[in-house]
Length: 269
Image 1: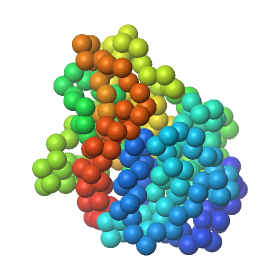
Image 2 (image 1 turned 180 degrees about the vertical axis):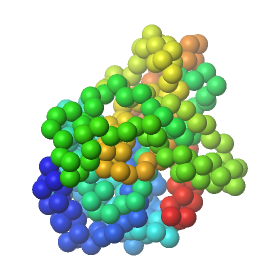
Image 3 (image 1 turned 90 degrees about the horizontal axis):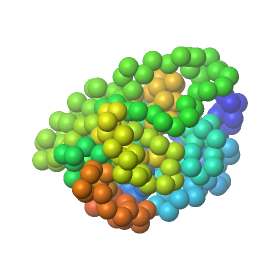
Image 4 (image 1 turned 90 degrees about the vertical axis):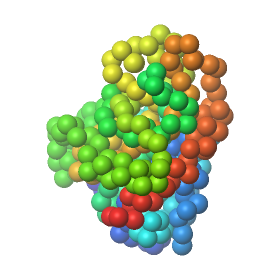
């Protein structure tokens, strides 16, 4: 695997993607943040050796490098999901590549359904922990050159980065929540009984991504900051018919506030 990672990194270096300080993964309906990146180099996933290809609407499938918040960043405009039929290794391969490109922190975003009864559509939830119900991407042989056999997950989401985000949100009068994100395989949205169960085991929001990326990021020693945009509600009495198009529209409405927080955080790195 390390040889594949290095081959991909060498290709990206040859295209001018060198020494980014941060990596950003943009989820469903959240690709607009990439428009804030200046002096860009843009490469389609299909042209990158060993990369999978995004197949989901709202995930354009481009790697973008440039200036964001006065710093060099590399952003994934679209991610990969287990439900697309990719093995877990494929889903998380880009995170390992970002690490070997030189990023110091990983920033993730997703659209999620809120199961906390205090949440509203459009809320920004800073993820402070997760429940992973997807296959663990570290199952199988471990390469000690990449990371330890048994990585610690006691601080999956970096407390320092969370604290910084809270200050930036306060300074900009942006209301944010904190909570636990739960991941399922999808691609179906949840039943009312499933929403109820997820809440009972400690989840505040549920989605179909992110946790596998976080596990691998911690495996390679990357601090992680992640946010969910609450695009629908899985709360008894508030559950309505949901479509992927609706999720994308609701995510786009809150994207500017998320961008403000991310810009401030990366600018301070």
